Length: 102
Image (cartoon, rainbow, N blue to C red; front, side, top):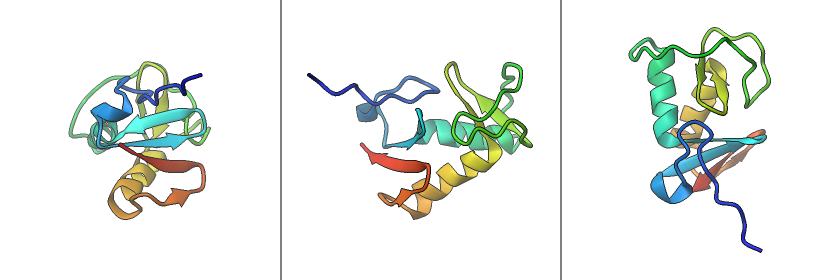
């Protein structure tokens, strides 16, 4: 039996289409979506999202800002954690999130 293909929960890109995927509990985000989400919470890019829901990564219901994709929501704190993972912890395993190398 083949293993399911890891896909970004926000843009549906497969691992081979990204430089990196970061996996949380039941959710995955690619490097490109981390950048878009980071720009969004910093107010650089405006993209309205559906009614606020809990963060799919950490479960936090209330956050300063959230970014929503078709299957997942990420809060500002988790976005910053993903940025840290991509910049400083390449390949390291961290609690609740890990880098999947492409």
